[in-house]
Image (tube, rainbow, N blue to C red):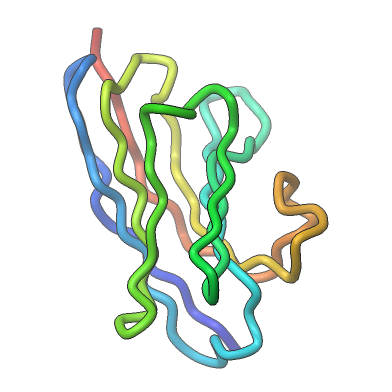
Length: 124
């Protein structure tokens, strides 16, 4: 079993920054990578970013490229999402999840374990 706990969400003004953390515990050795998703009010869950545990290779949604940075600390089993130049449209609940492999990394179906989510609200 794998457990994920997100933290770091909050209220920030447009143009501000936040850093989200996701601590992973349990049987993490079999996990390929980690992803961040978000779900805004009345919207479907959408892909934000992905990172491979072993290589650190990253991949981003176009909507956040250049503003968000995903990183990991293997020793701490922790993945981060640094969010800069935040916009009101970034307002959502942000979830981290473990990915099974390189295929399907941009869709929720490609992930098995999920955290409980952390709220990010960006005011204009």
